[in-house]
Amino acid sequence: MALNRGLAELIVMAADTQPLEILLHLPLLCEDKNVPYVFVRSKTALGRACGVSRAVVACAITANEGSQLKPQLTSMHKEIEKLLV
Image (cartoon, rainbow, N blue to C red; front, side, top):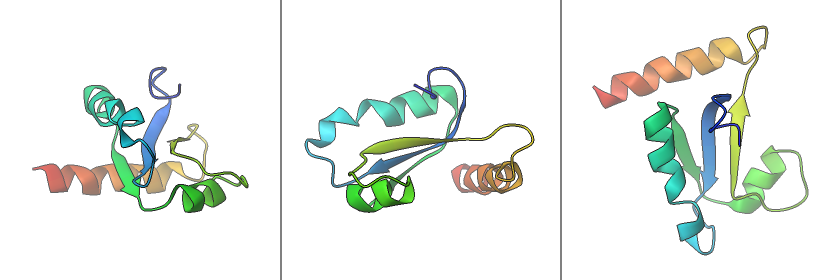
């Protein structure tokens, strides 16, 4: 998993996962690894956002150093840190 390997920049989880207990270890792991996480309403919508036709209960957003996402992810990290202070 990208979170365990230190590759994850953000973890996205679906709140309508059944049973929800299969995801409940992820927020604790995210906090241990200092990786922000968010819940979205629908696993179907998360699957579409991931580009697949199936429901997805969790995904990791990763970015390489040269990635176009890197500035957006850095900005998101800073905004999340402001909320935690």
